[in-house]
Image 1 (cartoon, helix red, strand yellow):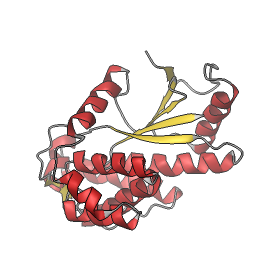
Image 2 (cartoon, rainbow, N blue to C red):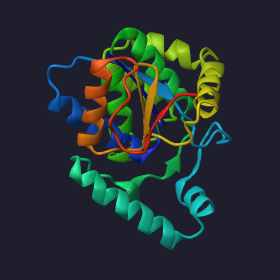
Image 3 (cartoon, helix red, strand yellow):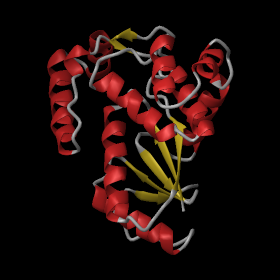
Length: 223
């Protein structure tokens, strides 16, 4: 079984979705799926140096009060999967392209899952800028990726066009929000679904690559 997980590293719902996927897998310990991580760009026009987070979110959602309500609700959900979001200490919304390039490198090295977790926790819990190359190199090295490989990658343009291509590919196939999970390259479920819902998808995917899943309306077949 293959699960392609589509995320943006600056998306709090994607962090929640990662934890819920892990909880679903714990409900089905006999399943050992191959998990691959793919990029999605919530802010494809973000400047390379990122932007002031407060100003960015007010522009996106309309007011400071609305931002506070939205992220307060996300923080409450986060606690249910043992994520203690610290939105108040995050100063900048980074451009996430380089973090996605590091995830791709980590995937080649077989350590994508810990790198994804490190990116999320570093940004959402410790408030560090995951657009900063020094931060990315450190995190990758802590997860087992040679620092020289990460530095060489980030000093080049390698993989940049691939990130934008994958983002466009996701949109073309009807994925307009993240997280999204693609099972066996065929069936898609979008949103940070509850573990029980994801577990039902795991059951369907385990039966057959083309089995019609018995899951909610959020499930659709790739076009």
